[in-house]
Length: 171
Image 1: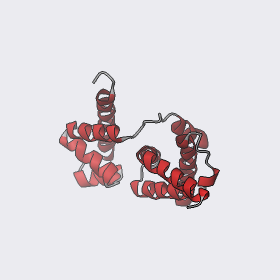
Image 2: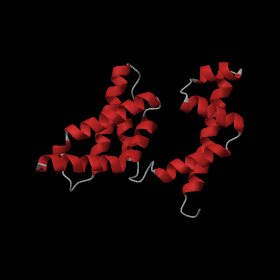
Image 3: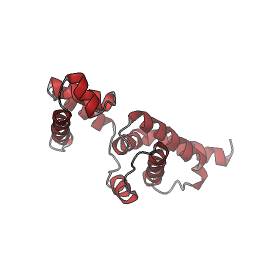
Image 4: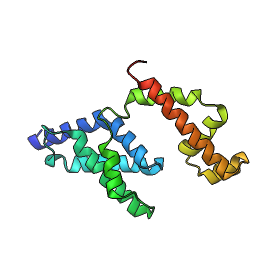
């Protein structure tokens, strides 16, 4: 195996090691899960094709986050959806700690979802797993769009507080 191939393989191994963190970032920045999965695949292809440009003595997460940011912007441009400003996206990516969105966080989120009231959990699942819009959820549950938006907002607050408790060093 050539030195070039070995370098590419090491970079791919770094991607695999940090996959959950990168995927979590993509999901957080791109709420359409199908598009998010496409973006993470594009990130892997880009990481592989540009592996020779990466210095193994530098931060893989910093380098791959830059690729994530650009791939998300590309995805927004292609879908003609309103994309966040470059500065907002840059700020969001920069604020993610290195250990963000790992297995511990995913397990905590699953526990916190179970603690939600059944109707709130149902709405969260409809919104984020099945990607229904608040309007669609309102029709499915015979509610107003405003009441769905309020319920989703409250559920997100409860989840955030639960996640903070679950992941705090004292717990």
